[in-house]
Length: 191
Image (cartoon, rainbow, N blue to C red; front, side, top):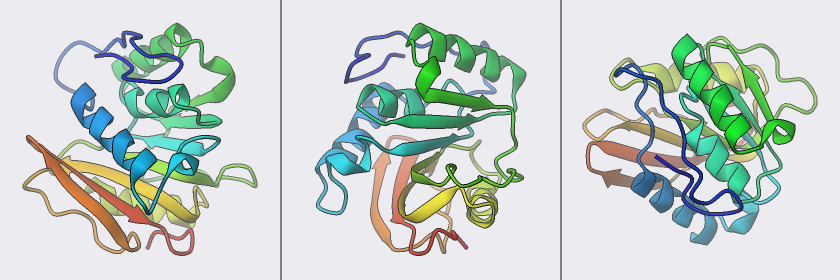
Protein backbone atom coordinates (compact mmCIF):
# COMPACT_ATOMS: atom_id res chain seq x y z
CA UNK A 1 0.00 0.00 0.00
CA UNK A 2 1.30 3.42 -0.96
CA UNK A 3 0.33 7.03 -1.65
CA UNK A 4 -0.84 7.05 -5.27
CA UNK A 5 -0.20 10.65 -6.38
CA UNK A 6 0.80 14.13 -5.29
CA UNK A 7 3.72 15.42 -3.25
CA UNK A 8 4.04 12.17 -1.29
CA UNK A 9 3.54 9.86 -4.28
CA UNK A 10 5.02 6.39 -3.83
CA UNK A 11 5.37 6.70 -0.04
CA UNK A 12 4.77 3.28 1.49
CA UNK A 13 2.10 3.07 4.19
CA UNK A 14 2.22 0.66 7.12
CA UNK A 15 -0.81 -1.41 8.07
CA UNK A 16 -1.42 -3.12 11.40
CA UNK A 17 -1.07 -6.90 11.43
CA UNK A 18 -4.19 -9.03 11.26
CA UNK A 19 -7.55 -8.44 9.64
CA UNK A 20 -9.11 -5.82 11.91
CA UNK A 21 -8.10 -3.00 9.55
CA UNK A 22 -9.07 -3.09 5.87
CA UNK A 23 -7.24 -0.27 4.06
CA UNK A 24 -8.77 1.15 0.89
CA UNK A 25 -6.90 -0.42 -2.03
CA UNK A 26 -4.55 1.77 -4.09
CA UNK A 27 -6.63 1.32 -7.24
CA UNK A 28 -9.83 2.30 -5.41
CA UNK A 29 -8.18 5.42 -3.98
CA UNK A 30 -6.90 6.31 -7.46
CA UNK A 31 -10.41 5.95 -8.91
CA UNK A 32 -11.92 7.96 -6.05
CA UNK A 33 -9.51 10.87 -6.37
CA UNK A 34 -9.86 10.86 -10.17
CA UNK A 35 -13.60 11.36 -9.60
CA UNK A 36 -13.08 14.04 -6.97
CA UNK A 37 -10.65 15.99 -9.14
CA UNK A 38 -12.42 15.66 -12.49
CA UNK A 39 -16.16 15.19 -11.97
CA UNK A 40 -18.36 18.17 -12.91
CA UNK A 41 -19.82 18.22 -9.38
CA UNK A 42 -16.38 18.39 -7.72
CA UNK A 43 -13.08 19.55 -9.28
CA UNK A 44 -9.69 20.42 -7.82
CA UNK A 45 -11.36 22.64 -5.19
CA UNK A 46 -12.83 19.50 -3.64
CA UNK A 47 -9.36 18.49 -2.46
CA UNK A 48 -6.87 21.36 -2.85
CA UNK A 49 -7.01 23.55 0.25
CA UNK A 50 -9.75 21.42 1.84
CA UNK A 51 -10.23 20.59 5.49
CA UNK A 52 -10.66 16.82 5.52
CA UNK A 53 -12.07 14.35 8.03
CA UNK A 54 -10.93 10.73 7.71
CA UNK A 55 -13.35 8.82 9.94
CA UNK A 56 -12.64 5.18 10.75
CA UNK A 57 -9.17 6.20 9.53
CA UNK A 58 -7.34 2.90 9.96
CA UNK A 59 -3.98 3.45 8.26
CA UNK A 60 -4.95 6.98 7.22
CA UNK A 61 -4.59 6.17 3.53
CA UNK A 62 -7.55 8.31 2.41
CA UNK A 63 -6.63 11.36 4.46
CA UNK A 64 -2.93 11.10 3.61
CA UNK A 65 -3.81 10.79 -0.08
CA UNK A 66 -5.83 14.00 0.25
CA UNK A 67 -2.92 15.77 1.97
CA UNK A 68 -0.55 14.55 -0.74
CA UNK A 69 -2.89 16.07 -3.33
CA UNK A 70 -3.07 19.48 -1.66
CA UNK A 71 -5.59 19.34 1.18
CA UNK A 72 -4.84 21.94 3.86
CA UNK A 73 -5.53 19.76 6.91
CA UNK A 74 -6.85 16.33 7.82
CA UNK A 75 -8.36 15.21 11.10
CA UNK A 76 -8.17 11.45 11.59
CA UNK A 77 -10.60 9.58 13.89
CA UNK A 78 -9.66 6.03 14.89
CA UNK A 79 -10.12 3.90 18.02
CA UNK A 80 -8.23 0.66 17.34
CA UNK A 81 -4.83 0.75 19.08
CA UNK A 82 -2.92 -1.12 16.37
CA UNK A 83 -4.47 1.05 13.67
CA UNK A 84 -3.63 4.19 15.66
CA UNK A 85 0.01 3.10 15.88
CA UNK A 86 0.14 2.50 12.11
CA UNK A 87 -1.67 5.80 11.47
CA UNK A 88 0.81 7.76 13.61
CA UNK A 89 3.73 6.04 11.85
CA UNK A 90 2.23 6.83 8.43
CA UNK A 91 1.66 10.50 9.25
CA UNK A 92 5.27 10.73 10.44
CA UNK A 93 6.62 8.85 7.40
CA UNK A 94 4.75 11.29 5.14
CA UNK A 95 6.05 14.23 7.19
CA UNK A 96 2.47 15.42 7.52
CA UNK A 97 2.39 16.18 11.25
CA UNK A 98 1.79 19.92 10.73
CA UNK A 99 -1.28 19.24 8.58
CA UNK A 100 -2.71 16.33 10.57
CA UNK A 101 -4.61 15.88 13.81
CA UNK A 102 -5.03 12.32 15.09
CA UNK A 103 -7.79 11.71 17.62
CA UNK A 104 -8.63 8.43 19.35
CA UNK A 105 -12.35 9.04 18.93
CA UNK A 106 -15.36 6.90 18.06
CA UNK A 107 -16.82 8.46 14.90
CA UNK A 108 -20.34 7.66 16.09
CA UNK A 109 -19.75 9.75 19.25
CA UNK A 110 -17.59 12.72 18.21
CA UNK A 111 -17.04 15.80 20.34
CA UNK A 112 -18.25 19.18 19.03
CA UNK A 113 -16.12 20.29 16.09
CA UNK A 114 -15.64 23.87 17.20
CA UNK A 115 -15.40 26.87 14.89
CA UNK A 116 -12.51 25.51 12.81
CA UNK A 117 -13.61 21.88 12.73
CA UNK A 118 -16.18 21.78 9.92
CA UNK A 119 -14.73 19.77 7.02
CA UNK A 120 -15.49 20.16 3.33
CA UNK A 121 -14.39 16.62 2.47
CA UNK A 122 -15.41 13.69 4.68
CA UNK A 123 -14.23 10.09 4.22
CA UNK A 124 -15.90 7.21 6.06
CA UNK A 125 -14.56 3.69 5.56
CA UNK A 126 -16.07 1.74 8.47
CA UNK A 127 -16.03 -2.00 9.07
CA UNK A 128 -18.47 -3.55 6.62
CA UNK A 129 -21.92 -4.77 7.58
CA UNK A 130 -22.38 -3.07 10.95
CA UNK A 131 -24.60 -0.15 9.92
CA UNK A 132 -22.00 2.38 11.02
CA UNK A 133 -22.12 4.89 8.13
CA UNK A 134 -25.62 6.22 8.91
CA UNK A 135 -24.90 6.52 12.65
CA UNK A 136 -21.56 8.23 11.98
CA UNK A 137 -23.05 10.71 9.50
CA UNK A 138 -25.81 11.69 11.90
CA UNK A 139 -23.37 12.12 14.80
CA UNK A 140 -20.83 14.08 12.73
CA UNK A 141 -23.55 16.35 11.38
CA UNK A 142 -24.93 17.07 14.86
CA UNK A 143 -21.43 17.79 16.18
CA UNK A 144 -20.63 20.25 13.37
CA UNK A 145 -17.91 18.24 11.61
CA UNK A 146 -19.64 18.34 8.21
CA UNK A 147 -19.46 21.73 6.49
CA UNK A 148 -22.39 22.95 4.39
CA UNK A 149 -22.08 21.49 0.86
CA UNK A 150 -19.28 19.15 1.96
CA UNK A 151 -18.50 16.12 -0.17
CA UNK A 152 -19.11 12.92 1.80
CA UNK A 153 -17.45 9.72 0.59
CA UNK A 154 -18.51 6.40 2.14
CA UNK A 155 -16.99 3.02 1.35
CA UNK A 156 -19.21 0.02 2.03
CA UNK A 157 -19.30 -3.59 0.93
CA UNK A 158 -20.65 -3.80 -2.62
CA UNK A 159 -23.70 -5.77 -1.42
CA UNK A 160 -24.38 -3.49 1.57
CA UNK A 161 -27.04 -0.78 1.46
CA UNK A 162 -25.56 2.70 1.33
CA UNK A 163 -26.78 5.05 4.05
CA UNK A 164 -29.70 7.26 3.06
CA UNK A 165 -30.18 10.89 3.94
CA UNK A 166 -26.61 12.17 3.60
CA UNK A 167 -27.73 14.66 0.93
CA UNK A 168 -27.98 14.41 -2.85
CA UNK A 169 -26.20 11.30 -4.15
CA UNK A 170 -23.63 12.42 -6.74
CA UNK A 171 -21.96 9.15 -7.70
CA UNK A 172 -21.80 5.50 -6.81
CA UNK A 173 -19.19 3.08 -8.14
CA UNK A 174 -18.35 -0.54 -7.39
CA UNK A 175 -14.75 -1.67 -7.22
CA UNK A 176 -14.58 -5.42 -6.60
CA UNK A 177 -15.99 -6.09 -3.13
CA UNK A 178 -16.25 -2.35 -2.33
CA UNK A 179 -18.73 0.35 -3.24
CA UNK A 180 -17.94 4.07 -3.10
CA UNK A 181 -20.88 6.43 -2.62
CA UNK A 182 -20.43 10.20 -2.80
CA UNK A 183 -22.95 12.75 -1.56
CA UNK A 184 -23.10 16.52 -1.28
CA UNK A 185 -24.18 17.64 2.19
CA UNK A 186 -27.02 20.11 1.85
CA UNK A 187 -26.87 21.90 5.18
CA UNK A 188 -23.93 20.55 7.12
CA UNK A 189 -26.29 18.34 9.09
CA UNK A 190 -26.04 14.85 7.60
CA UNK A 191 -29.34 13.61 8.96
